[in-house]
Image 1 (cartoon, rainbow, N blue to C red):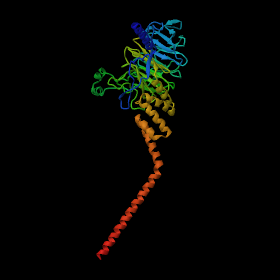
Image 2 (tube, rainbow, N blue to C red; image 1 turned 180 degrees about the vertical axis):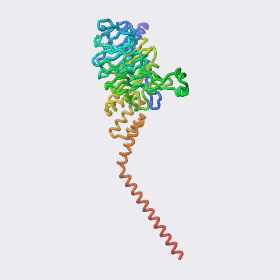
Image 3 (cartoon, rainbow, N blue to C red; image 1 turned 90 degrees about the vertical axis):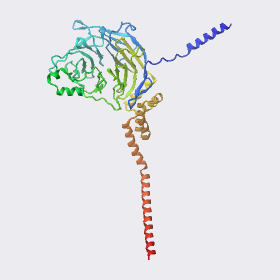
Image 4 (tube, rainbow, N blue to C red; image 1 turned 120 degrees about the horizontal axis):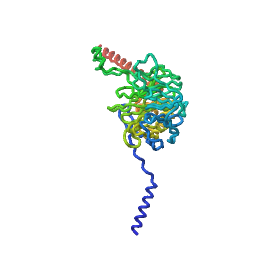
Length: 482
């Protein structure tokens, strides 16, 4: 009887346990941001891994050293499987709907040779940086060949110029921009017909002052044996809806690893915060190898040093950090590309041949939505969401700044000063302080002036009384002396 009762109790406990919700899995990485002072501050995790897929799992065979991917506006994901010389197109349900393994090039079968970059235009044309074939191939949405763009031809190019295109983008006007291996003159620009028009956005030359000194005192023969000072080459590129070009530079020594180039090639990246988009602040600097531009001025950089994705807003403020190197779901071995669509982020791992999808948490969704409203100038609506963000993270400086700016617009200058101070926004704090002083003086100017005038009159009356008293004492003294 006792045994039967124990079995019943155990069975009931197992049923109850199976009906209870399972605890959430621990995140494979920590969430953090950086404060105004450059200190790493723990923060809620903005994105968590939702799934990871390989070529085997979707029935197309393993991906061999995939090098790039592109999230199209229709939600399809184009994966450049470089080692297999093919393009794999996935829909939003992770089903392979198309593979482009070759194409007919004017009657001849043609193939890719270790391509490294892919871009899909608004018209659905596919641009591939066919690296080892030294060309850019343009295909239609079905994979049919349209044309190819070979090496640029110009008198300004040296005779030993070698063309190995690595990344390619196209703006709304149809201009084609190519990042090529070993090209230090900037991004190669072609017009919509594929004709070379020049270079844009050359990186500044960086040099060691000691080496520069020795170059100035050395002979011509000695200088020729020394290291040449050349600009840093770009390693990746993306374009926003306004036609501005975002670039990355992997050199850890550069102070400007991210640029936003206007049509003239001038860097117009906004940095209104204390720190620009430089990744981690630790001794070993971040090395950005990819950049993804999404809506509302938000862009994401992929750091190959630690496998992290840094998300910044249009002012260059860090919103959140996700990912890292490791062997769990949500971590990477060799991350090579990052893309986003809606509230999802995709990261391509070259060595694992794997794509990891990240979904926004409640905190991440609130930050994204609040920042979107903030970017559109809807500060009052954004402030309501920033208040919810602060309930999840009381140290989130962007939220304090967003609320402070909203109160500044509403004329609540004293409260705005409080929030802007917590957000360490000195510029807008000064604006709020100026307006507060002006309003304070306008409100109490009459009272102060009345008090000042009254004080002056009192002082004058007291002095006059003292003077009369002194004169009276002198007259008494004179009278007594007589």
